[in-house]
Image (cartoon, rainbow, N blue to C red; front, top):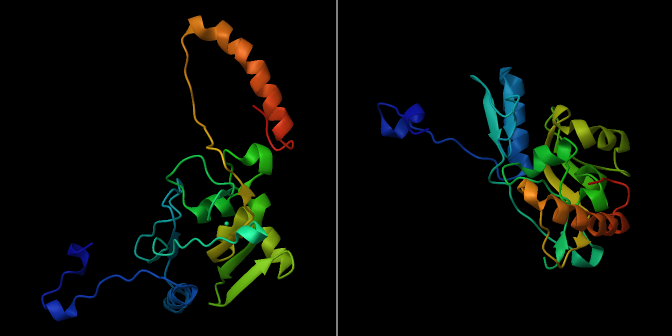
Length: 203
């Protein structure tokens, strides 16, 4: 990055800026609109389609916007609370949420979008807007699954749940000689899972 901003005169070197607020994002969007250049938004940089990259355009890097606040009384996210998140640590909250979002708690609580209460969006016009089931319900419906097509999400309010125990998840591999023991263990585990799930998922 330093090589790309290198100039003959040190005073002419301008460092790239990262947005820290929705207002900063709004300014970047308006700039891209006025200049007529390509615009990309990068959250967790987990896109396989390249949507977080641009060739010659403006990239809005949201990595400085990582704040988390909790409201334990309202059960909306510090202590002993969890929300449905992803299954790998490389995904950003934005892409995961706006795309639907499946996580280890989905079997019990549904997808991430099922637990989304509101989203702060910056629209193409530069307007900062909070959408929910009460405020702009049609846009709220649209962003839950296709949110990246309607603006830049800068804040999410998610429903949280009491989660006092660790959640163990991942993939396990066993040799064939363990098959009988695993088969015996599977039934009580499956029955326990069915009691705790709400038809959001199955093993």
